[in-house]
Amino acid sequence: MRYLLDTSVFSQPLRRQPVEAALLRWKAAGDAGCGVSIVTVAEVEFGLALEDAPRRREKYRALLENRLTVLPADEAVWHAFARMKARQHSAGQQVADLDLLIAATAAVNQMTVATLNTADFSRIEGIAWENWAASGVSV
Image (cartoon, rainbow, N blue to C red; front, side, top):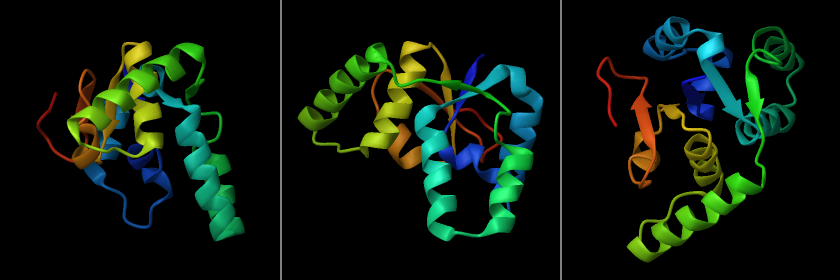
């Protein structure tokens, strides 16, 4: 697996108006080339539970559930998260903890984060990331 899909990319098939560029990049990378963090799964499932819309839940089951390898937030990920959070804090650039956990998962597994959330992931030192909303690649 080369790419770790951030929640912003993984959830695209559930959107009313998905970002076509992200879907095309995912298709080109292939499901075998992509994975997700358990954090991303939890974020999507939280949104579905909050929304409580049976049709969207069914769409999730049909399109996304068990589609990709889910990477755990294991001890190595938590250690990387702690270092990243300390770096961000020292630099005065706060990033949401869940985004840092996704970034730590990518770093530990030597993967590139595929995201639409460039504002946060571009500020995290030491990770590779790509903006899947654009035709160009950012790292």
